[in-house]
Figure 1 (tube, rainbow, N blue to C red):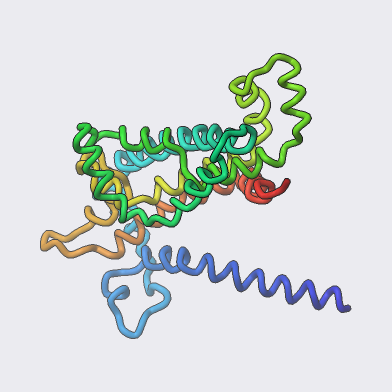
Figure 2 (tube, rainbow, N blue to C red):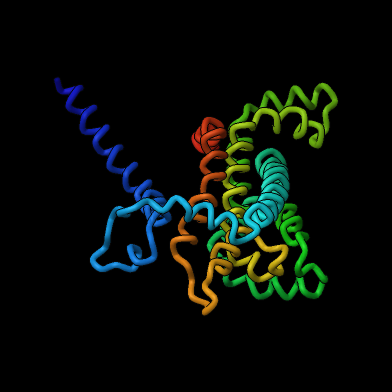
Length: 274
């Protein structure tokens, strides 16, 4: 009886927490099915009187939805692939190589995560403007090649937990550290690779500030288009279309996470073990 009560309490808590996490998304879906009057009504109308399914069709056809989605997908894939590989390479160096000042340098790298994006945004824009990279996808290529501190931390923790005998056996067989990384350590780290790819893809897919600042309207992403393209002739936003487009905007991220959730959870759980 005590075990059943404990399980009931645990499941109740999990259901409540799940509801809190899915509440905003559910409200977004409901908002995409309402009329403008129902969205502006006071007190709040929780459910639409007549479901407006055409809002999704209008949101899809009013702008070049697939074109903007293609731009977002290209940028997200470029950054996610490059930053995963570069972060794995840097994390491997911090985990398996010895050099003077390695701990200090790693501390500086981790400390850089405390810098908000807005602090570095203007200098970054000026650098890319000087290099002629504004209105191109080259900034995301360079960001990807530069690695990400949080992902470096994940890979470093994972690689540090692999047995030293694995490295020694590879050295005895004549394997240098470059081949050791690509043939032994990187294939072993597929859970962290999966987690890093999902995290990096989500970062870029959901980014609004950088595409708004660096790209023109033709090359811009879906996040920027949703916030700026659904307006009336008078310049007023159309919230029901924005909500419907936002639902379609979130669906790819949910699908990617559902496909890669096993590797994502495994990567997050094993990256801190030694």
